[in-house]
Length: 619
Image (cartoon, rainbow, N blue to C red):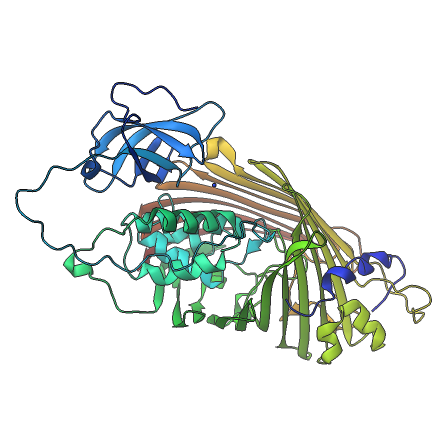
């Protein structure tokens, strides 16, 4: 499909990236500082404020009041004064060196204390349990420029895994409820949580069966620095997981399983309902390089405007490694950029899609350098028959602060031929001279800038159709179809107790719609991209605040107005939700949510308030 006001270089700029078919001064010691003695090493296992837990205790000669240096490489980044010494771990207060910030996994220098000889020979030590992390550290330090800012849809198996780990106490400050469609996380945030869970599991927290999820998460986020460094440093320190009680003996290989849900009471405009909501999901290891993922849920009842469009089986995939790439076959979700309100090309606004997806990291010299390439194909049934779709995306970093994403996608009423797998979709439609009514082309550029550790700004530009040069054009004109989004993410608001995200959206009249309904970018009346849709100007904002590890608050707002009179008649849509949540335990939560809504169209206004009370128990 073609039109005359979006210039051809926008599509041609994607060609080089998309043409390929696949895919870590010593301080003077005090009287109790042990720097003069021969040193061994421990590590900071967890760090909350200035309170830290290290992986060593009385068995290496430590005592309350001992002051130890914290090192990162060849420099001292702080000191820890011990306040409690246990058998396997110790607790202390951390003080940072000037200009430094101690972190989990930093090395703590210990005295090499000689233990007193035992009165009787010790009993033979039981064999250590298998390593908790099976991913070997890589000498290839770069992260292949995989974007940490991309949103991960909450329906995916990664949330199932993290909900189970949180329920077992591996993610202090989080509960299973935090992963129940209440919040979307970025790839970097999920990687940080995975690294924390790896550290806490190695220190003895959680259950033995948590390794099933941990190993898969460690592989899924292996290109993210948090997971890469955690795996490498834990393997280097070789910290054994404390022996379990007899009742918690190591289990044989079992599927990773996450089950959570509970009663949900809703009241909206006099309509009171009491239902059960939740999700059952998990993974089953087929081999070291393959596993099955499954998620059955009805949580879309509270997250979608059209919950009846979704089926109970939300995700069912075969995941495996082959040809140095990660593959996924089955029904799943994927997001194509950093937007929380709903991404331009593909988001979780519509039901999951049947797809085959390949994802691979490349390193090609100085140019184009390191990048990650994703390509997926599939099809789905809609009201006007079967639709076929494809999507490609390249993620790369222009500098330490700047990230660039290039994507293109299509929806077609006919399956593409072999050339459609090899050529960029824009070139394919020219070579095949496809009819405008059978092929709808879209392109996307997203740019992120990490202003500081506490602020990332980003933008996204979506073009539904790109005009061909005059010599290739077929004389066909289509209205301009453009959408763009500007956003800001604040991951460390309120003294790192909260996060914030704000996005501004603007879209032309016919973006996503296509010349004919049979190639519109939608499924069952839900757009595959942004839910704000065409002919809209919108604002999205969200604030999360942690009062304590148990009490949390959330404020979320969506405000969309119709940009221009006439069709499509999108109307004005406003929603403001306030949530208060109490996590009695990592696996037990209760939340109260109040949502005010207003819909205003030509000649009508509808207002309403919804009250939702949810109690959740996770296993």
